[in-house]
Image (tube, rainbow, N blue to C red):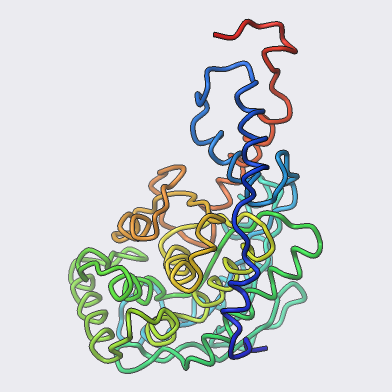
Length: 353
């Protein structure tokens, strides 16, 4: 179902500022614990942020989900990936059968994996698949637009609706995951178009391409920018012309999480491209984002800086799927346990400075 003409505005109107009262109460709790003020660093920061997002000083973040959006890319015709496009549907089935890295890490974190076919260029059938196909892959961005503006809106709507359904069931934490062979190329194009980085700064090795193919990939991104001439002041135009269906779906996930007062943990380069677009469409969603890690992908550091996010960890990861974001679920759990289980100076009989 496509978003109505005023859909983005209506979503923006549902995104409320963080609850300052809840954040103040969370800070007071942190300051009462048996430790020097601020000594737990990012664990304290995320505890305050979670309170502001949910409006609860001690929120229950036990229900967590990683939403893996899957879609194919016409730009694979240009030979920009070390893997063939056929890997996308094969990996979707791997997710659904529980065999991918994100499945392993999600099981360890007690999180649900929700796999969405939003644009895979294959007919997929599985009882666990959320089938929301907009079209069978995008157009080749080196020659024309990835999709129409209406298709981009429809893909955003899919992400929003998936979050809305899960939030209605009590999920409070969402991670952005993706699968789509070739998707570092549109992500790099989005970064150049919206972030102003140079092509050589934004384009990386993706699945592990060699030097010759890296130079070719950069030229493909430059051709895509020239062929589409997207308006940098219109993020939806940039997304439609240069993005991917799974990226657009993740834009909807991020906006949906913010509209439902839920945390959204951003994974790597492709997920951050979605976060960049979401932040331009609705700046109100930015405080609801948590950057999980800094990927080894070439442009990810610049992408995070452009958005204004600081990653929690740097683990030399570059897999995608939502793996880095799910790994950071453990830090959210740790922050919650600190808030609930750590003794206060008063209860422990410890003198304060």
